[in-house]
Image (cartoon, rainbow, N blue to C red):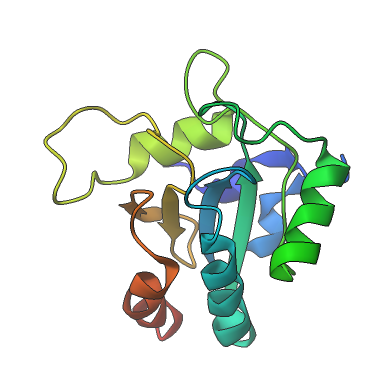
Length: 165
């Protein structure tokens, strides 16, 4: 069985980043966009990160322009937008596809291994919109998926449970 630690991605500055660097941490992957109705969730994500990073939480923002062209900027523009408007300090990756034929292998792993949300009627495993969240335990296995409308604060109890194990 594979884990997220087996993947190498590009950070927002274009550098290779082995996810093995986060081994032993609780991870929250979120496909993000700067011009989305859910963009304000950046504030809640940053608050979660600040509240739990010392206990081992890492939030990883994954810019994606596949949903309505809502992340059209360059990596530099995205990074600047996030820090200027929301004070984002959690790691951001370079833009990647999170669905479809060009889906990054990390998102193949996340979508194929995350249980579908309880309210889902098995419409499929593709990411449907910006700010879909995948929660990964300290051993690198994806445990939960939360759709776009789930606010970051609603994840606190799930994160706390993983941080205490």
